[in-house]
Length: 181
Figure (spheres, one colour):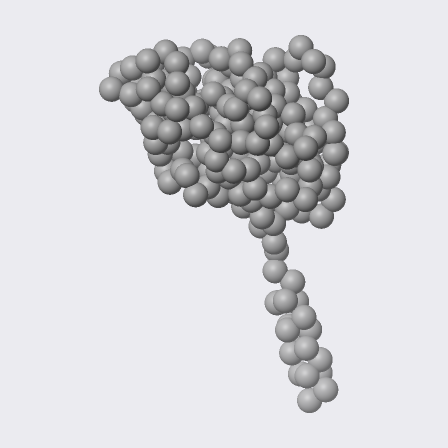
């Protein structure tokens, strides 16, 4: 009887230790980008607002976060970086809608916006070529093992991506779509 009680006690203890998963969600993006979050130039007709994002379940040891949006379907041969922001403090788990305009005023203190593939600092919404099938936009939050990334000031977006992956303890992503007729 003591063995059964001990086994049941261990089972209760072990089932209490469920793996915590790192997740990313948005109240603004539900499978597709809508007009407010689309780029505002090149006749794309959007407002270029960065979407609201929130995440939870970061692993132990997380010292900061980074966020990116990448279009692997862009006709460049290398994809297209729409948004890169890093050095988000570890106690921040949310970016509000519109946080990442060129001024960066909506970002938490210490967060750094990087140049996107439009050549602009901050968020640059979807704007695929007219007539292309809907593109995939991979929205990712990275839990990083460092509080500050030491990235050369002239580094292109794809180099920053190398730094993000090198320092990632975990990543959480979702994919949204957008196409123009």
